[in-house]
Image (cartoon, rainbow, N blue to C red; front, side, top):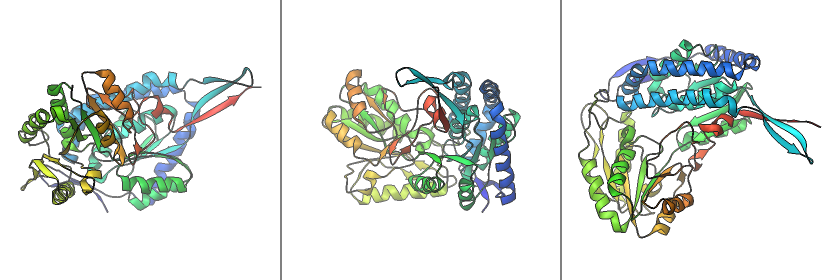
Length: 455
């Protein structure tokens, strides 16, 4: 099974990449293991300098990388450029802040005796990443682990094989070191064998619930550390004292970013009754008037979905939701013709017995729930299998904070949509996974936190 890149705008095959042989995989793992051993004698500051060089190279190639993403998976070029800036900022954050974060931490025991907590690399980390953010998902794993001295081998989604190859080429240009980062075009069976290799000591996955269960099981069988960033059905809460103009604009942007193909999209709008009519009228107008087009065109507001399968799967979810009682506020759906386009849909009156109530809609489909008060907001928000991120809008920050603290999720943003920032930890609870990426927490996920105890 070759990796096949299909342009979502034209529906035409761009390029195919052959799977690696077992011999090629063995060679890459040997190089990665050699890198791990060699880095024990290389200072953290030297790797930090390399990360700064890598950040500069990523920025220099911003247009090239964004264009490749548009062709591979349909990301609007403006969004692609923003993703590259995030990648550069991630690399710089770990280059500039990481060395201090890796300094030994003093501990005391037994009435004043001393100990030091040191952070050491553990070995090869396998990074299994999705297509929706083809660069930043990779860099979120690569940057902190490279600083530690852990080599990273990447198994990317097949539809963004061109992005994976380009990122590897730029890592080579940055001279990160032989074996520091390797892109592997491999099958599911081959990745299972790689995870079982004794030299592999960690697995970081971003993907679906089903993929998470499989990969976490394989990691568990090998007794190695894993982190899972899985699906989400995040809430976007509008309390009755919210700035409605801000909330409406942010709600639409947060749902339609990356054509709605974001784990932390605002998938469930929970709005209090007093402002529900105005909020619904505002989002309906914006959803209906969104401009579909070529992801390479600067004036495109909504690009195609990533694949034909994505369109067909999302359309079926919408039809099933309506068949089970959901009402349609904005009637969109799959668009006939060239390209994998899907017009925005807004659903309401979704009851717990409707399968849609607990599902994730990975595309431009929003759900609206109207509730009476803050307690109902919290109850509905937490009635979910997921818990990745969320947002609460209120002009009373203390009130918003109280609600945010009660929502069972990994992140909550107040009066702004969820987003990725290198300084802030990212990750979820429940079926959204476990472990954290970015910030100091992301740096320590695959570190050997070794305690040195003095008598």
